[in-house]
Image 1: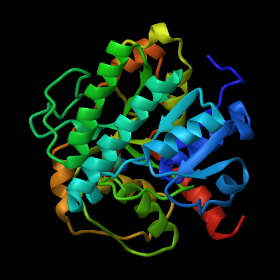
Image 2: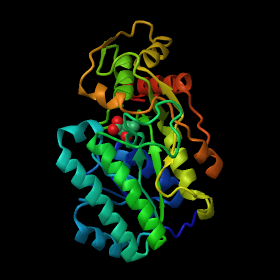
Image 3: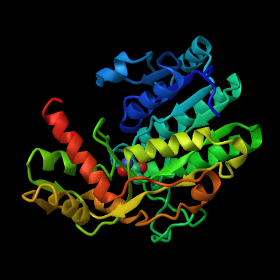
Image 4: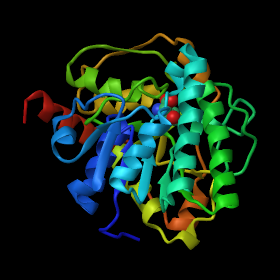
Length: 322
Ligand code: VAH
């Protein structure tokens, strides 16, 4: 339910999801009601100029408490995390940021009586022994990346705080997210963003995944829709307090390249798998998100052709400075 007295903190507001989610929240709750926070100042002008911004290290509990006292937050969207590919290069740092950061937010929520928390999980919580087709909500979960392990532990921690302390914590297992407004950072699925930029720049694209590597994916408008529908659903509808399976489509690099070539026939792609191939191979190919459909009526709007059309249109406008 939406109350315009809400005061919202978005941590990780400069990231691929955070930048757009902050602007959407400001449209709903009002610019001054949504405080953006990140470890560094935003590069995105609209984000910097549209409302309050705070520099915040999510490991700094004291600064977190000071901000909560100053702003009297009623909701927190905690998006700050190190993603899968970067995580394998800095495992200890990733575990610290992803786990200690979440613990600090959960403890702050308990101490300050913050009404609602959003925390993103990922399909990275699944691993090599998870059924890879139509992966169910409840199944084997043996992630073998530090990012995936931290997200699985985080899901357990969120469910523990929700059950033991009755905190209203909500979460989605995002697939790969694709957008044109803010670049992703350090993910295994980032190729699916970069491929559009290279196509519009009319530059050949070398893909770090094999051409038949199927992964669950989602266009950013659908990710924003799912996040806000989940957070605005009546509490009694939210039956899953670990994290909801969520998807919109699945495709391979060969398929996304073919959808681009319908618009840019000369676009060329080559394949040179690197260490990220092993990460992608441990994840599901398709996701069963029927629990999200039944609990809060989830339905995506974008498939691959519609996303490709929109991405190319908007990247061409950006390139022309429109
Ligand atoms: C990553 N984009 O690639 C993230 C995501 C499903 C993957 O969590 O690490």
